[in-house]
View: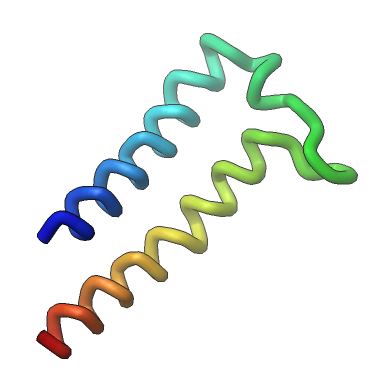
Length: 65
């Protein structure tokens, strides 16, 4: 039960970081990380890949237990 809330809050926090961060802190999200990858692109990639992974983990744990 706690894992589900932590995962949901993590996804919501990353989404809010992008939604609020683009107009408020554009310089922060434009920080270069590696090559052409900046912080905003990394957050978006984590949202794009991490959300389905968390959903599958949740479904697997629910089916197992």
